Length: 319
Image (cartoon, rainbow, N blue to C red; front, side, top):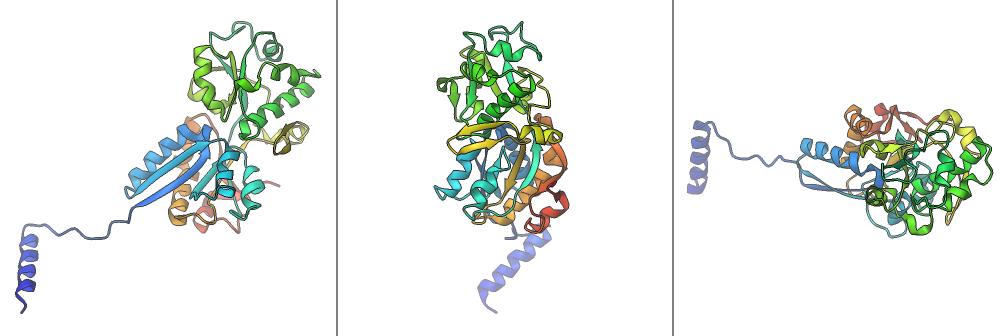
C-alpha cells in the first residue's frame, strides 16, 4: 500500500478516535447580492439584510438606495446588474424595466401615504392642524422641502396629492400656492436627504412618506385618505390628480411599493430566496415595524411569470 495513503488513513482514524472529523467542503459558495431600492426602504431593508445574511452567512448584500426612477434607469440605461429592484411606485417597473425587456413581472409588497412632517422649530408649528394645513403651508416665509418629481416617486406623488387637495377642498390654486414655498433650491434626489435640513430648521416642513415620519418620530399631518394616496378605495378620485414631470404627465394612483428580479440578475436563485424572506411574515413584520402598510399576500402582476417559490406568498393583482 502507498505510504502516503497509509499515513492519511492513520490520520483519519486518529481524528475519528478523538470524535473529530475534517471539514467537509459542503458550505454554500459565497454570493454577493446587489439590491437597488427606493431611498425610503433603506431603514427596513438594512434590518432585513442583516437577518437574511445571519440565516445565510455565505451571502453578502450590497444595497444601493435612491430615487426609484434613478434606480431603474441604472439598469435600463447604464446597464448595471442588479439582483433585486424595489421601487416606491409599482408603475415604475413596467414603464421602464418591462419596456427595456429587463423584467416581466413585479410584486406589490407594502403601501404608504404622503404627508408633511415638521418640528417644534417649524414656522407656525403651534397653529397647523389637519384642517388648516394647506393655508399654513402657503403662508409667506414658510420653507418646504420635497424630492425631485423627475427622479423620485415621492416627488411626483407630493405634486399629485396637492393637485387632489385643491379638488377635495375646492380651493383652486392650492397646489401652486404651496409649491411656491417649495422651490428647486429646497429639492433633493430623495426626500430623506432633507431630514437633516428639517431638524436644523433650514426648512420648516418636508413632504415625505408616512413610514419615514413614523421611523423618525416626527410630528406629521394626518391627511384625509381621499388625498394621501394610501387607500385603493379612492383610486378613481386619485386618478383625477396628476403631476407634470420630465417623464410625462403622471396620473395619481394608490402608493404600492413593488419588487422584481431583473432578467439579467447574476444570482436569481438567491434573489428569489431574499424575496421569500421579504414577502414572508418575518419580512412583513419588519416593514410594519417601520411604519409601512402591509398586505396579506404580495400582489403579483402576473402569477404565471412569478418564480414558483414566490407563488405561495402572492395573489393576483386586483383588477
